[in-house]
Image (cartoon, rainbow, N blue to C red):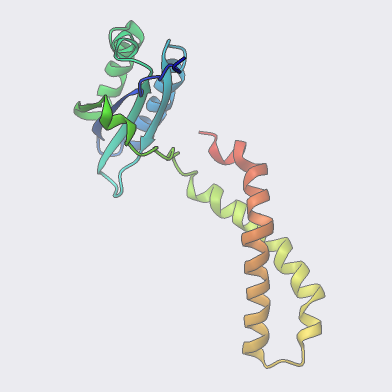
Length: 184
């Protein structure tokens, strides 16, 4: 008895540039399109890789179980509507590359590259972690290190705060604040 082997998904990469000053709107439209795409038969995944530099190309990687599933999405009125919306905030039409067959077996998994939260939210979240952590360390630990020279004491305290922030405070704080940080 032989086990059935599922063919690899059809992977398509669309490369397109957002119009100047339209990156936020472009990314929001992509997220909306991904939500609608999830309802289509054969949908596997959709991810966006933002440009490495401001004004560069976005790569939108979509996976469908079969070529027919991808074609069904491409021919849908919903997809056409999203393409029209995206055209208002993008430069030109997307360049497509479809990866099928053996090539798809070796295609690396795309790490979803979500859009970073606004800088002010990241700054506030960082402060919400640093303030209580530094306060506790300065209140409880600093007096115990008073015998050390200033630079050594400062190095020890900042090292302890950095360690606590990196391994204890920020992972939890980022998880707790994720809905707020990622809200658009």
